[in-house]
Amino acid sequence: MRLAILAFSVSLVSAATEIPQGSHVLLRMVNSVSTRTAREGDYVYLRTATPISAAGSIVVPEGSYVQGVVSHSRQSGRVKGKAELGIRIETLTLPGGKVIKLTPHLSSVDSEGTSQKVDGKEDQIKQGGSKGADAVRVGELSGAGAALGGMVDRSWTGAGIGAGAGAGVGLATVLLSRGKEVVLRQGSTIDVIFDRAVPVD
Image (cartoon, rainbow, N blue to C red):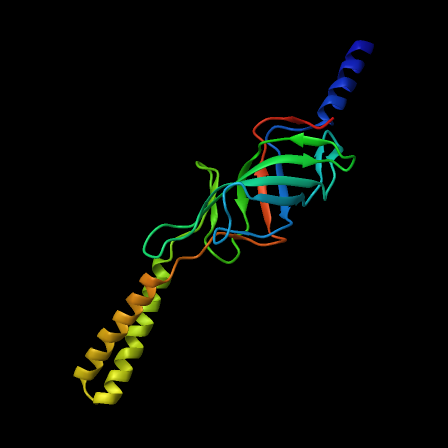
């Protein structure tokens, strides 16, 4: 009986000194990162947004420092090519100063009002497409051109010419402008998940 109690106590101690496999941890950005300026090898600084607990004990307190690095960055293209950002989390620093190496993968990220999200297969943050917004922009300029052409020429011919000109301007505007970038602002959050247990003591 004593051996069973001792074994149970030891298992609780060991469980309480590691980040369990499968744990989700919310991290908050300390600096801002954007695919507009980020380069491979740039450092990314974060803090734990919530404490990490195991077996009823806190093993990593809230506010602990986390450091990562930009592993991949691609700016959005003018005609095609969506923005992509890869971040590799590398170290966790405990309040006592101990540095722990770790390799969780990205689970989710703040959308920042866009369609950016984590691609689980490639472990990267990718920006969504802008086809809908582009079509709206072309349509708006086409409509404005038609109205202007109709008022100037006072005929359906003028409206048609104006619509064509407006659509041309709209299409040129879309082709010359880049899509949205992946942006992680200071204070935004990233959720990561641990594929294996990480000892912290």
